[in-house]
Image (cartoon, rainbow, N blue to C red):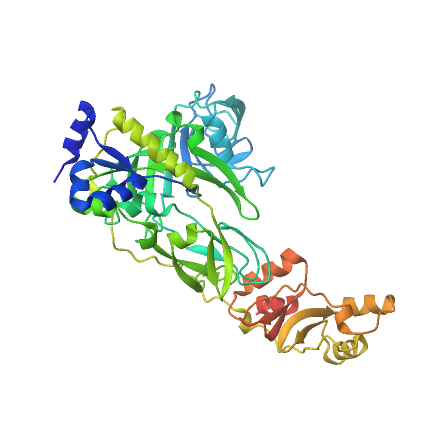
Length: 490
């Protein structure tokens, strides 16, 4: 058994043995757990990924005359001011009021890079805070305190994502191609901090960490913490951080986020800790879930380990599917090596947690009123085949009083024809087969999708109806904007 006190003494004396998590795997394989535990004192870990749940508390100091900031913007990105007169919290995902390609993450990175940003604040004015407006330029040096506080970072592992639908999806897991066109995953697997201490013996409240190049601390379990999908709440001084270990980013169609670099030293207290830090990607399992189904509990497509994900391809339904990472293994390795260097140089000491992080949890969904599903508002579908004549389709529309007819072949959806298509075909004297005038790229919904999702699809694509299909793209109904209007009326 070793203690953190003894390990810190070795750091002071300059005879500490530090290895990265990558090096530890090979060392344990070569020497065995017992010998590795005796030889190694500290294992450094690292992760570098998009961590949306991040932000900075700032104190701007008082102006003359003073102002109580009711609303404040930094480069047109609004920060939360319900704290005190000149304090604010800027979240990385908050968007600029002028551009969806710029947000809180960009402001934070610019401050760390030494740039000035425009601060604008307004107030109604009071006796002790008479000023009603202020516009000025500030830098990180001008701010009294700038403390990064991230409610949910350093995911132990993450569920991978794919897309069974026939549409491209823009998500927080990146762009997902239709019909299982790709898989994306997050997390660094065997070198990620919490995977090397899965029982949270040495990572807890008070643990000193490497946070974006500065010394930071774990201040609790992160939001949505649910082992083995554990998370950490962390803090650190923004003024000490380095821009190479943080990076603002934009996920198309989703929004702004920030890549945050976190490294945690794992003290090898005994053989049990040595064994934990020898974990391999093959032993770290997660699930590929289907984002093509817009539900909280998305279907699990496959159970996989990180070795499979990192290989760059997985098999789904007998087909080889390309896999790409959202996290940077390169940067995680760089963080591990930098933390190793700092410990060996006597610049970084370990701290024992003052409170353990919970291993038990129940992750509850939001409590809502009954969610209306598409199946509750859809109507029976009348379909035609591609070989049906346009004239026959137009007669069906008139007789049934409908404007949309799904086109099916061998029972599966292949297109849709609308009253507008018919009118256009008549005007252009193309009154042949439906296949010649139908829309082939059809936006669809499923029976168990919430009606809100169906409504959003109609709004996004400027259409007024959706075929309702099952998992095999068989048409089971239709839902129209009129159906949704009747639901709202009820």
